[in-house]
Image (cartoon, rainbow, N blue to C red; front, side, top):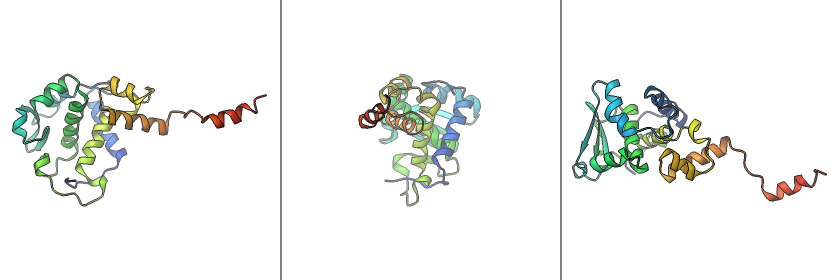
Length: 195
């Protein structure tokens, strides 16, 4: 895997950053934040120097999008932009991933794209790509939203995220909050003492 090393950040720290940005952008309780609109209209109101550019997909040399820091800019291909506007789960993840780079990695090299990354040789928590993925997960699947759903399919449908993200969100909530159904052998054993 190719990647750029950055400051060590835990998943919980990245969760805090993602949730803070949901609050700043006034989408804290929104199931499907319109990430394309947030990047195109809302973020430029908050960050004077920020630009969101849509270019021909072929101009990105195989990338779906990239982030540049000087000046702060997210560049996306027309296809991802259009799909993002239509709440396509994959496109929403791509755009949110780039947003994660923008808000976490401003002190790193001038841009992030598949063609200009260095090899990562440190712990995963220092991986800029892992951190952007974690930001995507926590921004699009915050626990206070997804914990109310009964299945990964419900999360994917209602939050407009990929099946992989929905499964991870569901499993996270199951692990920490949802009571698990008792195995039949345990239920049967407990019923035997009810009389």
